[in-house]
Length: 116
Image 1 (spheres, helix red, strand yellow):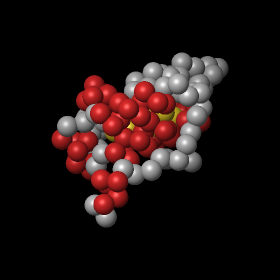
Image 2 (spheres, helix red, strand yellow):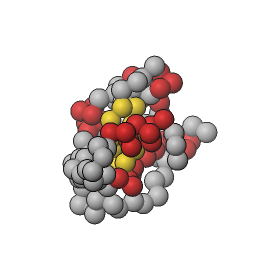
Image 3 (cartoon, helix red, strand yellow):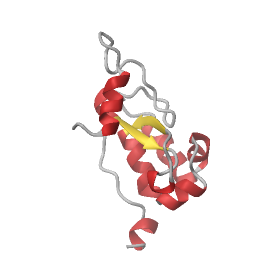
Image 4 (tube, one colour):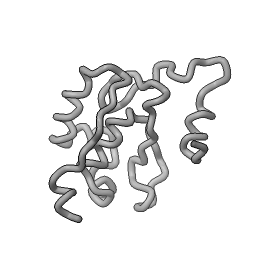
């Protein structure tokens, strides 16, 4: 892929330095392998957000499976706020004991599925 965020990630890696050197997920606290890195807009782009943070792909997908863009923009636009969300906290307690490259299909919450 050659998207803008992918280029940003690749540009952040200095030549000669391994791509998976100690980038730690601020949510689960595990090192993030290069193949599992996702950039998350703390405030959604649709709500004017620009700041991003690097997360595990599974953590990033779980955020979007639990919360709408409007909820993210209104109340969950910081790492601390995300950590305080009860369902996300339960997920993070579970995933932090998995291997760093662990990935599993993420399912939308029943609350979000009912909205469609």
